[in-house]
Image (tube, rainbow, N blue to C red):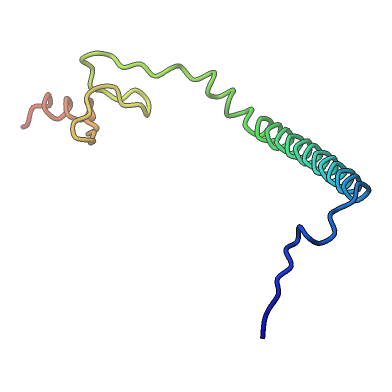
Length: 112
């Protein structure tokens, strides 16, 4: 039994009308894809603007509080807490709060 193979080139070559129709369909699909991507990009940008505006609106009190808070500055040689901010040296990641009034009152108070 013999199998005969007929190459596609020997088959019917596409006519001029078929080539033109393929070109028109390809151009139409490219135009639809471009329109879809433009619409998708527009929707993504609108969604990003809405989310950004929502976050901007919800964080306005926090931003005002950050603006009103004085910037953090260290003072050379001081080892005290100022409010809840530690100003001074931190050794090996630990900070120890020393209550100056408690230590001075204990050491300055004479024992009977």
